[in-house]
View 1 (cartoon, rainbow, N blue to C red):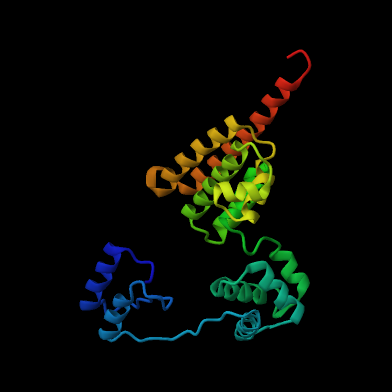
View 2 (view 1 turned 45 degrees about the vertical axis):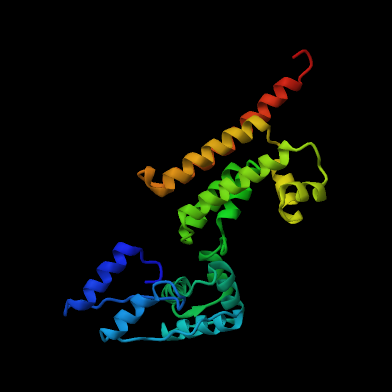
Length: 261
């Protein structure tokens, strides 16, 4: 509910006035200010409310996970609970689903080997994780991180924004005639840690290649906002294109540096 746009919010308000008696509608609100009025509308219409206190600490998530396994009729070893939390991440719905699936697959007892068998992966992949792999030219790693990010539910726009930010920052760093991190940070008005990371990511890039990559990122921005039929495909295509642009720039620079050229 807290992410509902105007048109959807209006439809939800209308629904409260004439609900379907054979339908149970479940809406979730994260407790923030956004769409708080919509939440009050549902309460005023007589909706049942289940308060779910936020689980924020690792210890609370481990306890939640153990309870989910117990409710599914199984038990989980302490090392397996820790491993599953590290592998799946902090989303409680994903943890609950993983717990019940493991109990079903392993006959009730879940140990660390069971977790390792089914949940080797990246728990907290973000758009910036994808961008880091792209900028260093890691084609296979980029696609792997992208698919993990999409599987984890990272928004297409956030991945596209991270790619654009990474390429632009690398280009800004590479365009200035200094390698002094402090000086770059002052000129670009960026924190030193970000400049240092951008310097590392800019290695292997030519200015021409970075300009092309900026163009790809701009196209991607439009694609993930509705221009493309498939945002998933648009992201993968852009990732492959940017990696290829970098590789072509490296190859071209090598040709120019050969003796006699």
